[in-house]
Image (cartoon, rainbow, N blue to C red; front, side, top):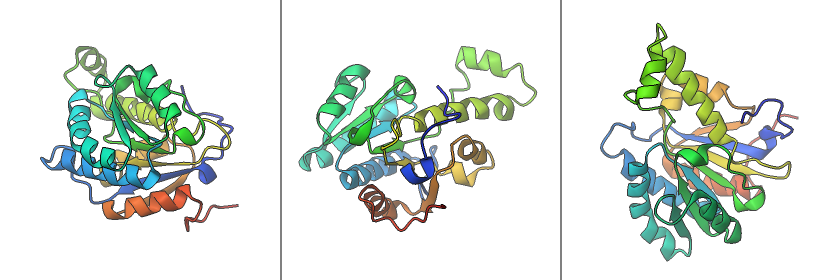
Length: 227
């Protein structure tokens, strides 16, 4: 599923937040930082959230760290492979907005949650494939520059599909938080940003994200949208 020729006005509907001070994904404190950011962001949105991960291991770790703080605030944390099937988790989110769903591969595309049931999308990490995965490795080996010619375009397409989970109808409005600073710190990050439809993009510090999220969702954001 692509976002080509979309009927949605993403400049008015979607705010893309990119924290500039997130640890690199390979750093030991990365998962803890993602967990803290997720908790703060989901509190700001009051639930109504979907977090996309690239590995079950990271999902389980963040689930364990985020459950206590969010449940204390009355927000349930549901994870794929722990609390039910993707379909069950989507239904739970639609039934109770005070929910955040943590998902992996199957949630990056084909999930349709229209309306206020989904107002916050968190992308924990840019969705690169594992280089040693046999099918990926075989296809990548056909290119002179496997990373630039195959890995980056493939990941950018998946990223675009993930972004598309947020705005599913003309009246939707929401925030996408990308907790992987490589999207702005690496040259290849431009491929990910360029894959998206025109939308509001804001680079900020992690501690600033919750207030920016709340302001965008309640309509008090100071972002200026071109006419």
